[in-house]
Image (cartoon, rainbow, N blue to C red):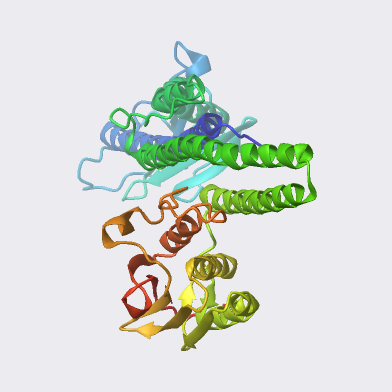
Length: 465
C-alpha cells in the first residue's frame, strides 16, 4: 500500500491518464473503422454508378478485359459490366448494342483483369458478400433503370480490412505517442506542486527542539493553510506550556527548598537536643514541616496534572450533591476546630469532570476551614441563579483587604499569612479548573463583613452523564 501522497497522486493520475488515453484510442480506432467502411462502400456505389452510365452512353461498344493495372498488388477494386438484353428503341441516351457482338444475352461486355467470366448478373442489387476466384469480396450490384445493363463492383475483403486497419492505426498513433509525454509532464507537475510540503517538512525537521516560532503561511497553497494554522496553534501552545513549565519548575524548586532546609534543621536540632522536652518540641516542628511539605508536593502534582492535560468536558456533575458529600467528609475537621460549617444546596448540574469539581470544592473548603479561627463560621451555598450555577464558600476568618484580592490565585502567594500549613496553590488550582469549564471566580467580603467569600459561577447544564 502506497503511504506517500506523492506516489499515490502520481499512480492515480497515471492510471486515469492511461485509461482515458486507451479509451480515447479505442474509440478513435472503432470510429475510424466505421468511417473507412462507409467511405469504401460509398466508393463502390460511386464506381458502379459511373460504370453503369458509361455503359449506357457507349452502348456496349467497349468490351473485353481492362487488365489489372500497373500496381496489381494494390488493385483491390474489381468489376463486371453485363448486358442483359437488347436496348429498346427510343430510350433516352441509349444506343444500340455492338452489332458485331453476336453472343447470347446476358453477356459480359467489360471486366477488370482480376475478375473471371462467371455469371453474377443474378445477384440482387445492393451490398453483399461473394467469393470469386478464391477471393472474398464486398460486392455492390446495380441495374440500369431499363434493365439492360448491370454493374457489379467489388473490393477484396482482406485488402479492404488491411486498409481500414491501417487508417485506424494511423488515427490512434498520435494518442500512443503523446501518452508517455503526458505522463512525464503530469509527474513533473505533481512533483512541483508538492514542493511546498517538502519545504515545510525540511523546515520543521531542521528546527531545534526549543525553536517554536510559527511557520510561515504566505507561500503555501490554500489547501495547506488550515494545516499550517493548526501547527502554528500547536506550536504556540507548546511554547506557552514550556514557558509556564520553566516558571513553574523554578518557583516549585524555590518553594521546596525552604521546607526541606527547615526539616533538615529541625532534625539536626532533635538529634543535638540535650533534654527530652527540646527533642519533643523539635520532633513536633519536624512533623509539621513534613506535613506541609507533603501537602506542597501533593498540590504541585495536582497542579501539574491540570496544566499538562485538558480535562474531559463531555460529562456533567451534580454540584449540589458533591457539595453535600464534601461537607459531610470535612465535618469532623470543622467540629475539631470548633467551626460552624453549614450548607444550603439546590439541585444544580454543571458541565465538567467530577474529579476536577471535587478538587475545586475541597480546596475552597480546606482554605476556609484553615483560615477561620476557633468559634467561626463557614457557609457553603450552591444553586441556580439567573441562568447560571453559583457556588459560594464564605468564612468569618481574617479576610483579605480589597486592594490585595487581585493577588489571590497567584501561585505560591500566601499573602504573608504564614500559618505554617498553607502553600499558596489552592486558589491557583481553583482558578485553573474553573477556567477549563468556562467558570468565573470572584473574591469578596465574607460573613459579617469580614473573612473572605469565593464565588464560582458556571453555565447551567441540563445534560445527563
